[in-house]
Length: 363
Image (cartoon, rainbow, N blue to C red):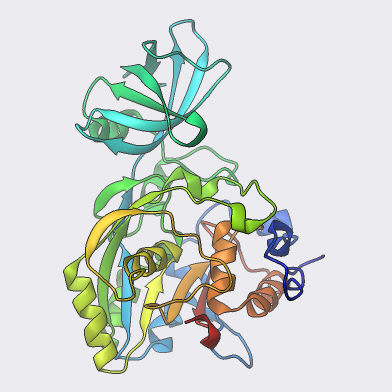
């Protein structure tokens, strides 16, 4: 195995974690965004005969006026907190979600020794600090912590939190990351990771899409920290996805119906948008509403809504790589990733993008 995914499994064998491994030269992991959002490269893979190496600014011309582009309007929280226990031991907290009544959070925590329920933490690594109480453990395998903060959680995070850059970005967050690890249309706070395919859109690209007549709509899916958790089982049929909250508005369902009626294609911007739309259609038809989803998409999944996908390049052995392999075809993704590595594309959150067509057998 060198610069491509391995061969697909033989007939009769289920998908294994190793089927989604590949070697990536570490220098291709983007540590910083492009100078301007739309300076990123775009690998257009919608032509089955040959991929096209383009600029992201070319995206509007690769879409038809009848198409519908759907964005995720979630807003990334400054969800990483540093602090210490009453004993003085350091803690690092990554908030997974804010809960009702608004001063409580569910979070991951790093500490030399896990604090017990009822213990107090002091959070903040600057002049301003706040107290937090450990209410207990929760989540799968009791791996998460339930905390009560001394104040509204959204306000506390905005004041003393840090941008939750992914673990493969080696530098700490800087003021520039507050802008660039956020989409230009971010509206509803709640994510702890950015919908990264949407980071490439700027006003110029949005204006070009509007001038071409491409309609747009929004969903919300609050990306959880579980998106970075490794798959820990070899047999993928045994993997259980973390839950994320999403909402598909009635206006977006109507926009999809109008797109279908005029013969257009539904283009999801990012895997989070795709998961929201396909989760909302698990009953057979796309339905408006809000709920949790644990949808795990692997090859063989039946897609009901999305025809095209704008996405970044994903980590080896990740659920996102499995999703795009299900969407565009395992062999197709295998060839495209090899092409991208040869072409020195930039990978992961701050990296370049690709435009995929759904494999005909995948829906």
